Length: 297
Ligand SMILES: Nc1ncnc2c1ncn2[C@@H]1O[C@H](COP(=O)(O)OP(=O)(O)OP(=O)(O)O)[C@@H](O)[C@H]1O
Image 1: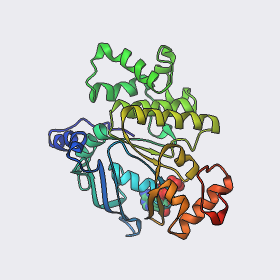
Image 2: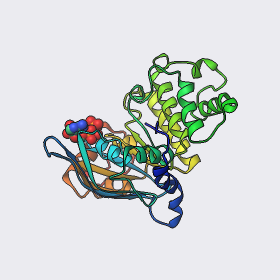
Image 3: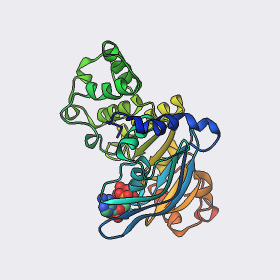
Image 4: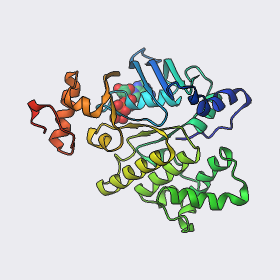
């Protein structure tokens, strides 16, 4: 998901500070005691989550279904549904995001934080040709002029491995593309915002294995080329191991572990992390050596 709102004067400070303030030496993202509560019931679905992410750093956010990964990401990006309330602190480039108005948040999201989701159909507009959807942030955020838009859209498509010279792609509606193509388009829209932080929420889960590998490779390449920070959400440790050296593990709305993947595999501190690792090894795609007691499998 990317910003669709027009930055308002009141939001300028947040929007402008977001990408620039990182030079001050602090982390790009600093999450402190983030809590998400369901308004109607008072149930806590995220409890006291704290972590930092440096500019250009990549981390995976792992945990079973329902552990609170998506809600944590949504609260960070300020897109949690109105039925829940976020509290605590989310500093992005030194600017507090919790408690901001929707207008202010949409400005920060568009210029600093972008998201891609598991099913791009949910974030793409079904009634708008994909070229126009990419054109939105190119014009609004990068200031590309109307007569230069077609070439800029073609470049954006090329950047995500689509044929920019094939006008059928830019002119297609989302449902006319394959799942992999749609995810590439969603990534192109996110990149058009020139984000400092990309949050990818299970971006490959809905794709078949071959396409999944291609999208992971693409994601890794663009994050590397653009020096973006990446928060990559997945229930799948082997997938995380392909894109991020650090992993945060959530369970029951809490952050249980925050370590390099290597150290986590060698010395998990919690029973839940041990189970997660054992499950991943059973699937046998996790290549990193494990503790001697498990014989590396
Ligand atoms: N809008 C909402 N209102 C109330 N509860 C919600 C809402 N959205 C999610 N939840 C609950 O919050 C908890 C965390 O959900 P969340 O989607 O963050 O989990 P997740 O770890 O991302 O799971 P998955 O991997 O299945 O996406 C779950 O118990 C879920 O049912």
